[in-house]
Image (cartoon, rainbow, N blue to C red):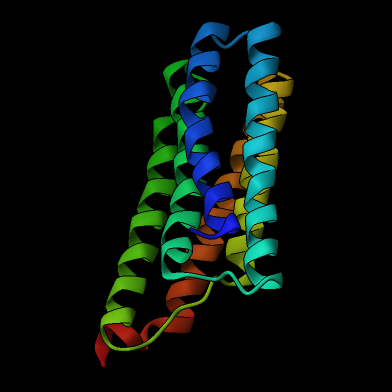
Length: 176
């Protein structure tokens, strides 16, 4: 197993600890929320580290291509689900995000069966980064309603934009 894949697995392993500390925080500022934030930041940074290592040291593998985006989705959706539970993140917004993730994954699967690879686009990377940063803001400053809504707007906006872009650029995969 490559170093990059081990780092990605470490990100997945951090998710239960993140969820536990989020539960203990009960959605309020304090030690548990800030510990959650620290775990989330470290896990988010591993996304950039494993990608750099995989590309720089030629450690790109099929396992890594599968696990890396899955780890990102699991981490961010874990945070959004906790915020949903506390009534801070609307379920409709989480549904928009999940729909985009399933749709793009399905598109990639269809393309792959036809021998095409849909690489991660720039807008998808912007979506991931803005989601991770936005969720960090919500953890760092819980209870500021207008700020949470601004973060949610950015997350939903970048999610929709990147999803539409994937389909516009790759729609032929569905009809060939």
